[in-house]
Image (cartoon, rainbow, N blue to C red):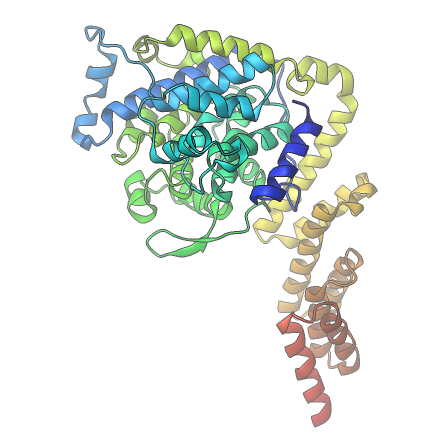
Length: 506
């Protein structure tokens, strides 16, 4: 299915079942495949590691922490000839893989049919409800999904990342559509996009190359950017019931965990560890990050969670994509009695991935080397500017965005980028305002105003600056413009009323 038809399908879903609009305020991610990476081996590692996590997670679910200490003896012992086969998470992933391979593209109706025709061991209540809606009540596939926030569809969608590791647009749309088949909740859809982006990012990252805090922050920034601007709903999260969504959990809370090096137990106690996407996705990413170059330690830490096996599956799937099959301890792979089937599917997925020229590093280098180099420079400047904004280093952000616009003036017309630039100028202006450097504050506010002449916030900022400069006439002028631009903006109205009151007293 090509991008245009995927786009049409998703627009249909936005209109008919209310899934979130992916084109409103969202950002692009430049996924860059590398010529020195063996993607066949990486895809094999992802599929095998997913199955290992599924098996061991299900087997050890509910066990006490002391029992998990015997993992080396039980799971790695050569004398123990017991082998395992993946349960529902592996089976649903296989169904997605088969659908992609047989159709040589993504076909949502075919995937929906496979999910009801082939019984899945350990099927959960959400999938049971979907099956009832689609098979028994004979609803359309796009009307059979359930409003669930859980992560089942996130894991099922891993093969989509394995064939789109260089194509974020198709990855985003396909991840969202496949999720909406069974889970129509906004957060579930966003979780799939984020996790698939993480898998693609790690496929494009050489094994054992993530070592510094900067490397980890770049990973977090990239995956959080993949869902920026999509979510419209917020939830009370954690024991303190702070209001947030998946973006804030990744871009803010996960960064805080990483910076402070919290223990897994502290996080589980404070934020929970259920299959709820707002709990399981951040926790899985954190366990992965804490043990990013140690497969066995990551497995042990993820098994310490007694509530759900999805944590183990997601952690090991991330590790499989990052490390590749050759770096997974062989004794774990030998425990899988369906490894040959999974390796065959992996090879077919790799072959399918090469049909998309965006995934082929050699073709990309040959066809658009200079364009990509230029675009990569622009992307780096853009992400750097966004990062400065997030750190509230607004003057650095302004310098970066000015360099970006100097290199490509066309970006001035991009509404999404304009928002970041306005944020930088407004933030820098407020810094100068705090330092009582009113002339510099005005300079930055007015530069930001160029990008949106009716920006009520900046108009109010300028009014306040003139108020500090004791120029009530100009202050009133800009406050009036702020109110006219956004009558609902209460701060603007309060500033205007205050200025008028001061003028009367004078």
